[in-house]
Image 1 (cartoon, protein in one colour):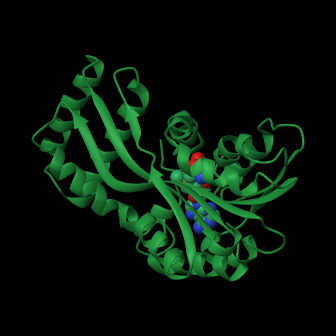
Image 2 (spheres, rainbow, N blue to C red):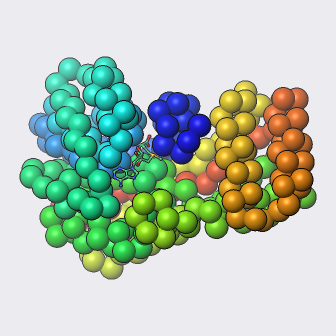
Image 3 (cartoon, protein in one colour):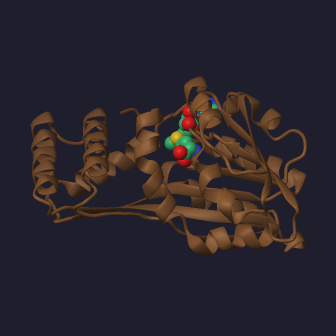
Length: 269
Ligand SMILES: C[S@@+](CC[C@H](N)C(=O)[O-])C[C@H]1O[C@@H](n2cnc3c(N)ncnc32)[C@H](O)[C@@H]1O
């Protein structure tokens, strides 16, 4: 499965849903509680998981603009069932090129998930500046922060984790990616520009029942380690084989660190 394939996004969605930080979601909900309706732009929406996760926390009448550059994912987002009084419009855009167009028009809230760790410092700064210029809030969920824990431990885990974090910093279409540093960078920029930020962790916690997703994640990490030349092919294969054996024996658990945050103009609190 590729990093943005519909199969992968479908597999991860329930893990994302249960990991989203409740305090951050409460802050988003509290901000819009007095509203009768809300207009949301979801940047890099994939199949629409953010609208499904956030929708129940927002006023009943919702108008979503779902933006992505993958027409197949947008078609799935458009076809997914929605609640009454919720309108979903899908908009194909390359966010690297057309970020400003994505934010045009009436917007009460910008939302995104699993995007910020893919983007460059320059692009993220551009996003922060555009949002602050419009004096609107941002809910950004599930930015990978570089923390991983594999149980039981293996002698090669540290090399694999270092390679994964180095791979995260490679260009994903927005210039050299911030990877694990992304959420911290965005939060610092918002605070420097006078925004208030509520933040919390949203770590994936996986145990012996989570066979399929653990297998996918570790295969991806082995690929990353191979791409980065971190270990020999034989050592990487041996590591993956030991990890697959642990998963198959129901002895493996995995946590992957993420950060959620809600940044809002201070005056609107
Ligand atoms: C990791 S997925 C997250 C999808 C969704 N937000 C979620 O949490 O399930 C990253 C998304 O970014 C989109 N994407 C990547 N580069 C993009 C670009 N230049 N413009 C618009 N979308 C882009 C991909 O198509 C994919 O849907």
